[in-house]
Length: 283
Image 1 (tube, helix red, strand yellow):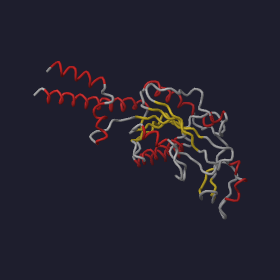
Image 2 (cartoon, helix red, strand yellow):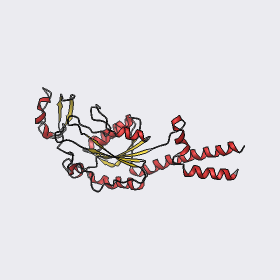
Image 3 (cartoon, rainbow, N blue to C red):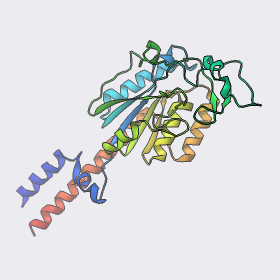
Image 4 (cartoon, rainbow, N blue to C red):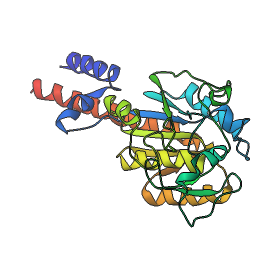
């Protein structure tokens, strides 16, 4: 009996990260936690380029790199703002879209103002930005210092903001939610249950991505010190809103314990089933 128990416990320990719980998840008995890191728009344009953020955006890179080098995420996804040169969000394209400006509304005279467009696809209140992250330019590249390797899982890249007539802050959808990117399919095909969101900018693309992940029923964590925003006021407003919606706001030093804690729970479940298995077949 003790020999059987020893062999069974070794087996359960060796494969605990997959666990019997994972094998039974399709029957709804248990569900293994699968973790994804979403690295949002850590691109040259937002760090030192045409739309560089004001509050030391490069400071997020060593924090994100440390997460990638020390924590075994099941997969990592890098998002890229990837705009055509005629994109709807660019202030420099305002004159080319004057036919779509809603009559009676204010016409912006500089970037960082909002215009109301009636088309060409849908009516939208559009923030106008300096030209940024134009496809196939150095401005759109991920920052050279950003690690693009992982300890364990697969790596994916998702491009957004590709449609010239729709802006896209979230890595899941355009702002009007007319179209999805491939991100949700990537996560679901790999049974992801929990996402950790880092990158730029806290109050725009990070927040929109986190809120959509939460709405799509992923347990969602924003790693606050691994993000930077556009303005302090809008960052605080978005953090408060994310909290109200159920998104967890954490520090990077909390990520390891969250992931290792889930792994320990799964291993404990496997060991418990192993003991029950031995008890059943030896009595």
